[in-house]
Image 1 (cartoon, rainbow, N blue to C red):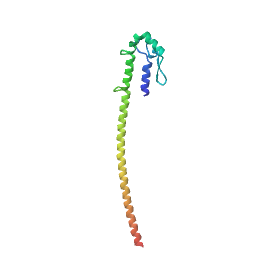
Image 2: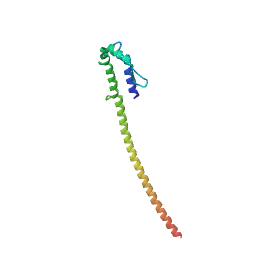
Image 3: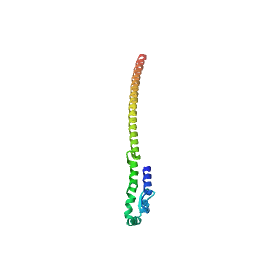
Image 4: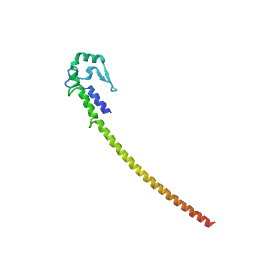
Length: 143
């Protein structure tokens, strides 16, 4: 998330190559980002730019190097097939499968240990029962 936040902040604060001289970045439209990552708009500045440079907006936002393309590329680099979010999602999914396999293996081992322990306990109860029977027989013989 920090990487995505940093990437988008970079796009929003950088200038657009090939844009008109007085419309190189969002800051010149009165749009800035706060420390919390929110966009703030100076409406007076935005209205001024829209009134004075409306015809140049396409050069800033459009084209292969425009602001809209930069935002699209940034988002695609995070959400596309090889994007950081998809890669992380795939990694977490694989880790989840491995953990499920490990849990199943551990469950099988625990069932085996439980079975062996119950068998040993049953054998011990049987041996104890036999010893008590022998002791009772010896006590009867001595009486």
